[in-house]
Length: 210
Image (cartoon, rainbow, N blue to C red; front, side, top):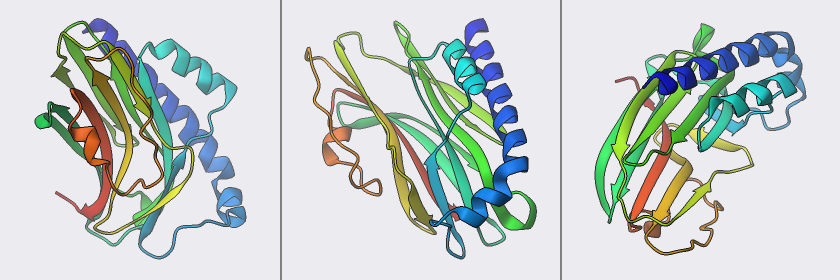
């Protein structure tokens, strides 16, 4: 547990570093970005970390992680809702959900978010991070898993109200190897994912605040 809290602490420091940098460069990025979010939609893209931030990431000590930024404007009363779903043999055994509200004037501006998994012998530590803080939980891991696969996108995607983005997932198998599933369509989760021996799915949606 102590190591898990250290993990969360470093992640929050990283968020602070990136948000500080964004206040200086965000306006220039917004003016030059040819893929700006349309009215009432969000653009989600992998975060570009500085060398110092990459060093902090390497010190976190987690097995799988992805950092990404969110830009765009949402109607009042709506938020980015993030969830982690854990499946075992096709059945969902755990779910963690949190929401991130927009900043001033209902806008997300280079807001740093993260999804992190630390694998344990019996329990896995799961974390969703964002400008508002973090939510953390645990999920039991089957004992007979032999191979793991982590996939997440390297391109940006636009998220409109009512849509879902399946941003990343960890797959565990009792077989000795796993083949990549691909991330061509981030708004559709491949049916095979939930039917694996074990799967941790991270998704986001733009919807009404809960």
